[in-house]
View: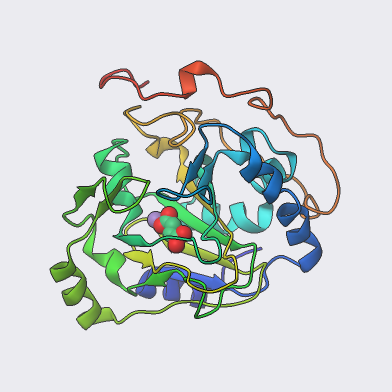
Length: 283
Ligand code: SIN
Ligand code: MN
């Protein structure tokens, strides 16, 4: 799959691209069948919503779950990002966000590059976010919202919010959001399960709580250009990966046919990946 010049121009202008029904229902079923098993596991990678048992986000499933390990190597996702950066990629972060019916909490307005810079010392915003809808996303179940064009602002000033939700985030002030929305407005791409979004690391985004009776499970992963690897290992390895090996894609049918993949954390996450390291320990 190759992005057209029109798509490249659109990405440059808006900071995101939307591909409705990019994966088939059969391909998505391979993943959704695995989610209850993932969320039931008692491991540090499952971050629960504040005061609840519902999973907010599950980290690093591609290291211990066969279907997600295959998704992590899917050419329909990896190739467009390789094209945009003109470089091989490694997996910086891999999340399966629940945003579960009734319990799914807010994601405050933020840029991912704010965290990658402040926490991980990633040199440039040469990492791309990919979102793959495992459930339909509609106007009621907390769709992801973007401020188009906000990626042009580069890394904005951010405050470390450690109290609003169960997951600390570098967030942007309401005053700055008001100004950015005056300029770019807000969009919330909606569509069937199997739809995919690519969005720039500096694109400002967030989502409201899910008050609906419908889950909004979405895979979010961040593909980083290998030369732009993080320089600091302040966060646990299962949140910000430290293995910069370039991703080698599997064939296009890898979600409907089985291909052998490594599952190095199948029997547990190595102790060395469970915690951050003091500054200066990064490779
Ligand atoms: C994220 O920004 O990482 C997640 C946002 C969401 O799940 O709505
Ligand atoms: Mn984000």
